[in-house]
Image 1 (cartoon, one colour):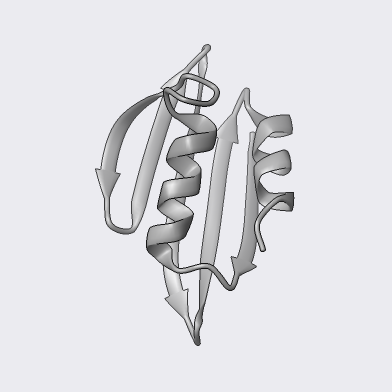
Image 2 (cartoon, one colour):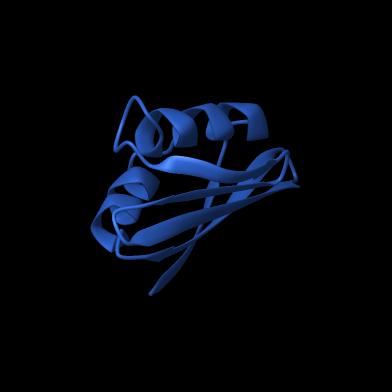
Length: 81
């Protein structure tokens, strides 16, 4: 299990869009099982990825918790601006 926190200059909406493109149907093919403005959960392949977003002084703090998708979560986080 991996718990990773990153900060980005992107807005919450931009981060949500990138999460869906990377982990969702057009990317890794995981299913969105829970969605709210501040939280997304993807499941599939025997694991899950949960992303929690929080606005913070002109930035977005993103907390990613995963099981079985550690490499992909690190790759996603390293690609954020």
